[in-house]
Length: 312
Image (cartoon, rainbow, N blue to C red):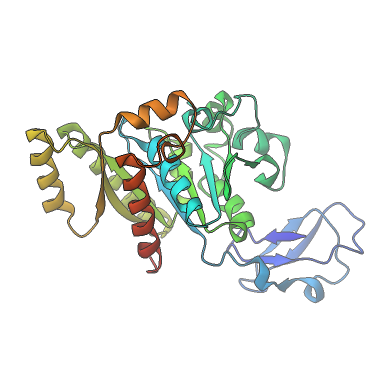
């Protein structure tokens, strides 16, 4: 049985072979915090041991986030995740948006259990709601309309912003990358996603209003860092770029000047193949392997791999 200290996040493996009672308290050997688990130990100190196999290891959690809609968040989450899977990485996509666009783009029904359903069911681990996709190395935790109830049910509970983080800690050893598709608004889902992430990728088209979207999400990141002490590395990804547009080239130059050290080198250009692939519910690389957006998202995957070799 894997348990997590709710004070410091340390994870342990418990021998439950002799457990009979429903609830008892244990002590974290790392921070000395005492907390309840749902089984009995006759001598907690003997069985409450660090287990290297439970370590998160090198799993990278990436939020795809922007407070502005229509910037290719879902397309980036799916296409980047597929490219990383094609590179042999174990990838989990989490649809953390009530619109469930990522779930739809994968051709999954909207009646599957979401993060909200799993919390409400009392599931100890969200792994029970994770599904294999048709594509090797690619798994998904779907969304549905009930995700809108997360704020109402959990927003004002103590440490609500840690709920996703705690669940990912239980599953991070199974994946190389976990990608979170977030909504275009600040609330439970965006806050939880950022707290759970090593890095956030901020997709932005080259238009004036999108520059404001970058600033908004960076303000949120700074507020979270100030409150929790959790640092999130942010990177800007230019999407839907039209090289023939004067406005696009001018704004791209401004983005490069302002964010040069945090601007990803890969640029995702406008490509009708992405919209076509959504109609047939396929990642763009499975719809048209040789199209420019498929090639560019593979370039992005390789850039992300190089980036994540450097600790945050």
